[in-house]
Length: 108
Image 1 (spheres, rainbow, N blue to C red):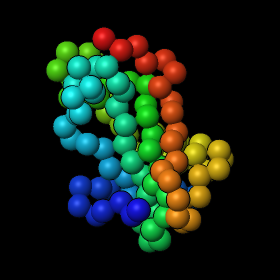
Image 2: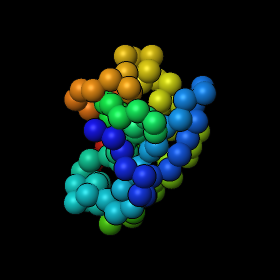
Image 3: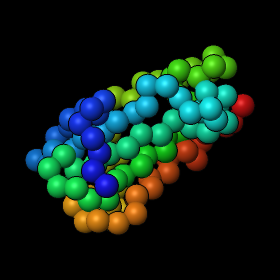
Image 4: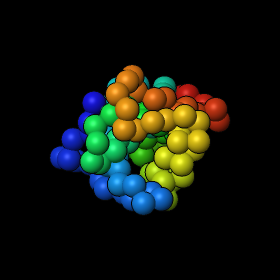
């Protein structure tokens, strides 16, 4: 499934163009800091497997007031490289590829 252009940002990593999207509003469980912030990445030119990155921090718009840092493009680039090293094939069809980096997340 391809990631739509609306609301997504373009990023070039090692000569390949991707699009990534972070929800502006948190889900209910993210708003209550029960689950960490997630975002999606897809290849910009060829539809294929979507990368779903689960970070180890709360969504920055949570309702509890926990401090959450914004997701920077450099973070996204690092996560894309990590996912590619772990076997993510962004130009092949298939189920979403999960990259779980939430090992240090403590829910509220």
